[in-house]
Amino acid sequence: MADWPAVQPTERTDTIVRRKRGRTVLGSLAMAAVLTATATACGGPFQDLGPLPPRFSGPPLPADAVVSEMTSVLAAEGITVGRQPSEVLGRCTERLMGRHAPGTVDSALKAAVERARSEHGWQAGPELGSGTLTLTKGNWTALTALPSPDPGRGIESVVIVSLTCVNGGSPTATTPSAPAPTPS
Image 1: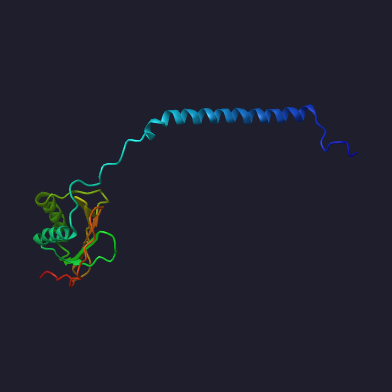
Image 2: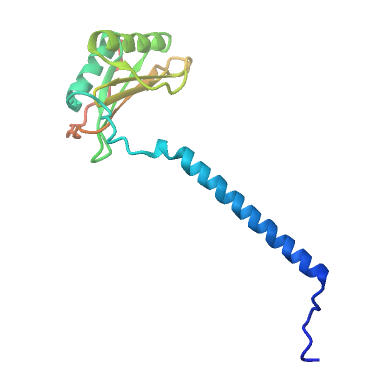
């Protein structure tokens, strides 16, 4: 019995195996054709078009100038903010924080954004949602969120403006400032 194979080959078994192999070969050829067509059709978009353009134009703006400009724009609308120390070393970020009356904080922030655009050359930044205001100028992006319309009885709304440097600027050493005074 040692000479007998475990399974006797039959015509039916041979036919089934040949059909499976045939389907596998046809599937492989079809996949090769699809991959070749895809590589041929999509080869154009993968051409090297050279380096990307710079993310901002002009010389990089220093952090002190940007903070001073945004502070004056907000002060012109009655929002008094103070510069918060940057806690991230090696990154170009600044934060302005203050308080304002809750009834007029939305309109004051929107007016400050318009003033920054018209008088100081800031441009509309990326759209991040209905409650967010963004501006860009040079290598800086300013971002603020409209505060809650009703922070609570007798509590002023907190105003935070985040300034982020794209690149090319250097973080400046800032002295910790006193907490922002509340407007009277």
